Length: 143
Image (cartoon, rainbow, N blue to C red; front, side):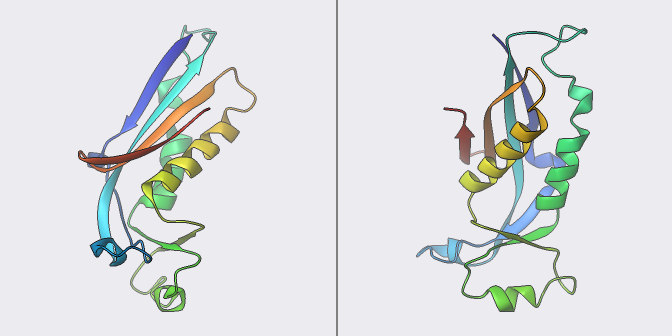
């Protein structure tokens, strides 16, 4: 089995703000990070270039990550302050509404986005790990 890793570190600038409204800690307040993303792919075969996947063809992922996580305000669809936060959209924030807010969920939706992209290729997504910084990360893994 061949494996490759594609990493978008926090220096890439996926800077977003969010809050975990149900938390009892300071995470209940809006706060931001420059998120990092680490993707692992695998294949039992190599392409004509002897690669699992051409690193130069990841533009589709970077575009999707920028749409969701670059200078955005992420909000959970069940946030009790959703109407207030929506009032900021296009005035003071680029709002992205998600089913859930957590690095675990950011990893899951990124994993599923990649999985759909590779559906017709002999490439499997093994994992996506999202980091807030060097101390905190969460992942979603193929079972």
